Image 1 (cartoon, rainbow, N blue to C red):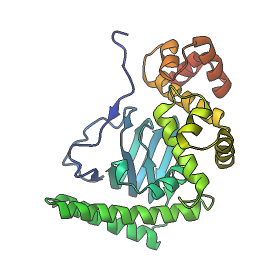
Image 2 (image 1 turned 120 degrees about the vertical axis):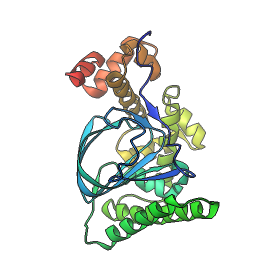
Image 3 (image 1 turned 90 degrees about the vertical axis):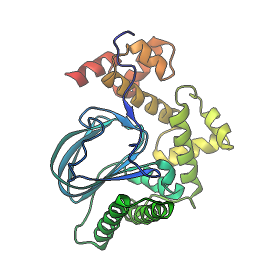
Length: 287
């Protein structure tokens, strides 16, 4: 283990953040970045990019996303990402503590904001988002009391509401918390992210959610197209991919970290899900 990278680097929200939010203007070069955004890493908070100008290439969990402004991108906690290129960037990047995001909004954002969203620069939606973000930036500079911070939180909530409304019109199948199935799906995904290493059986999740295994199976199948077991396996293999690419752990060590103590079984499962052995995947990515 000596000399190995212990884990994928995870950065907390900046100490410059005031009450869980930091608005960074892309054109402001007075403050150097607190960490190297060109290196693969995770964050323990959400990153919302609102690009009003420029072109970007950002890799998120092995997918290169080309973003041409005006556009928005949301990166969720735990996703491994890094900037490949940024040409003439204009706009803002907001670091947001997930606790500030309304639970109803989270349902829609988690489901419908997995890819960059292009925005019509002539639309009222774009105008409102730019005005609200600019106002938050101005208030942040003078946020020297509790009430100013509360005002920033209120504006953030209003802006996220606009974004959720826009995403909801693009992804009309996305439901809010009035849809019981969406609530169960979101709760299941939340538990999976916390317990994927030790909870491999659908029954464990069903018990925690106080529903039957059959109800959980039908809900996840209808919402995602995959069974609960397959969803669990896919998430574990995504985490294994991250560790294979961004750490120097052995395949055996990575299998253990994602909850599989038998290396042979882990290798077979990884190949079943990805089509490659763990070593083939690691070599392919580094080549």
